Length: 67
Image 1 (cartoon, rainbow, N blue to C red):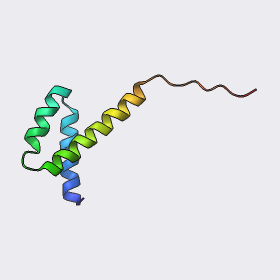
Image 2: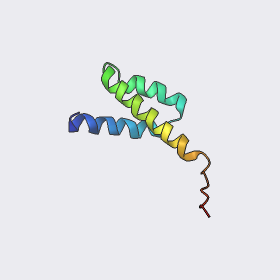
Image 3: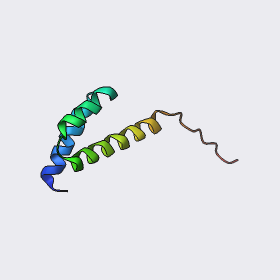
Image 4: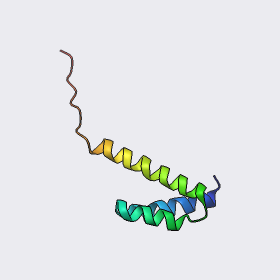
């Protein structure tokens, strides 16, 4: 991915993160219209972010030290 394309993807990601889930769908459709590759990249990036956030939001496992 070129530096220009990555910069554009990063900007779209940051904008999408400001929106709730229902607004994101419309935003991605409009922002990536005519560029299915950019749309796929943005959706994947958002999905990875959401998955990581859900893991971090879960309970922390306590670790017991062996006696």
